[in-house]
Image (cartoon, rainbow, N blue to C red; front, side, top):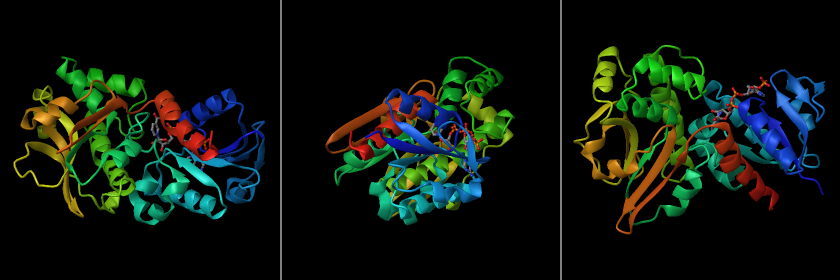
Length: 323
Ligand SMILES: NC(=O)c1ccc[n+]([C@@H]2O[C@H](COP(=O)([O-])OP(=O)(O)OC[C@H]3O[C@@H](n4cnc5c(N)ncnc54)[C@H](OP(=O)(O)O)[C@@H]3O)[C@@H](O)[C@H]2O)c1
């Protein structure tokens, strides 16, 4: 029997999933957009407020949520809840729901595909869940490809304006911000906390809501220093059993969840030898897990439609479809 998937959101990721689903011979009987509910011929068949009546277990095997992160994830969380109640498994690339409603979603983790929420196509979340053990002492992450790309470019001699134009052209920057300082603060102050909270919630390290993470924004003076020290600095998130009080860090956040100390910010790469192994080039993301059993590193494209759809979403869908 033909596999049937539904899309909620029809932007870059939604269209990317549609293309790959057609290649696999799956059908997409229903697409929910802000403007309405659409059938497989792209004809509008209902207003979006009446969407739920079109999402039944009989018609759909898996629903994929690829909407923008709106309202701190409340809308995506609402969709996930209603779909699970209707007996439909969900795959999501949206990070607000897991970032702010992780504690509520946790009991249903086996029915929610989450690989694309953090790390694009790297599948870092299932990798971290599998790798963490009682031997784990420290974990370090590069979770924001845009910031990594900006600082990689600066450290190669490009100007701030050049790298900012580049990330905007490539579609890497979160929507909204236009000025360099605002772009950096949106990535560091909104995207990173949502990803950190999603990672903590999904990987069972604690229960946290992104909106409760207090972030120190970068000001103009910090920005000038960051540009001068660009070859030394990267935005690194660390989750450690022991607190590192000597960290050389600009901006970011610090908090504790369960037994773990969490810190994020523009850190000095020379401060910790593990950072030298961690930092990837360009827009890539990276995870490093270190303990008495050794040091393990996963790295790869942290954003972009093709890696996110193929590496993240499609593999999650296939595991629900059992193919
Ligand atoms: N692009 C990437 O490389 C990437 C990588 C990893 C994760 N993500 C995440 O994946 C999600 C989608 O990304 P994207 O790049 O596809 O974003 P996008 O191009 O901005 O598309 C988002 C779509 O969401 C739809 N939407 C918004 N509110 C909606 C609602 N209430 N109900 C139904 N649909 C709604 C809109 O569709 P209509 O205009 O048709 O209504 C819009 O086109 C985001 O949360 C993003 O953070 C993206």
